[in-house]
Image (cartoon, rainbow, N blue to C red; front, side, top):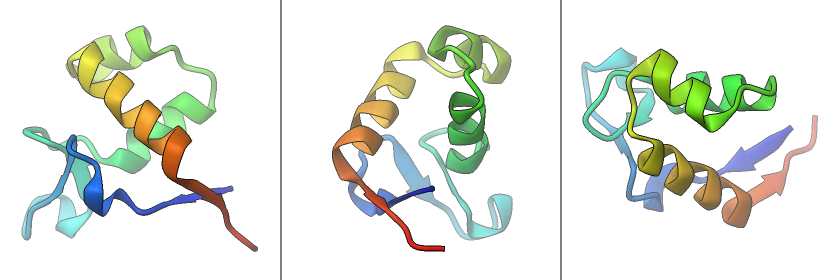
Length: 75
């Protein structure tokens, strides 16, 4: 399992009252967890983009950020 500090990702925001304060993709109600779960389960970025109505560029920025800032977490 990977642990990422999303606080500095330009495509992620946390808005009180939106999705119970979970981190979401900027300008949407889609949580980072939903997107990353789909990606981890082998959904292609294009498929995620279509399913959630998100710009592909936004997803690529998110995945690039995750790859550069991921740390293995201990269970």
